[in-house]
Length: 68
Image (cartoon, rainbow, N blue to C red; front, side, top):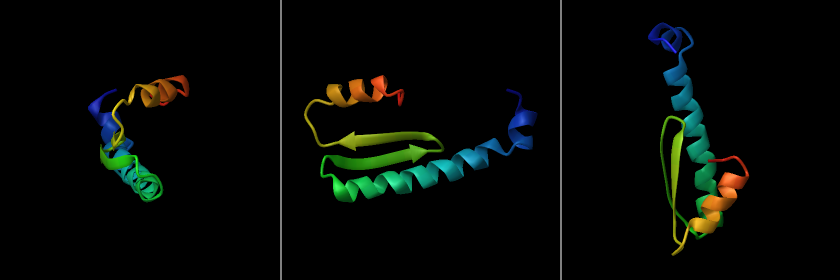
């Protein structure tokens, strides 16, 4: 994708806005589920830190659902 397309379509700003909305929504899970320790993100690249000793089952479930 060329730089002109990125600028023309305003993709960086759209990614930032969508990412912020996603982080806010995911932060609500932190209040519901004590296993969620922290949520971080930049644009649409998001990360969750969990309070569980082995995250492998979570990763496998995310893979099977097409999240990762």
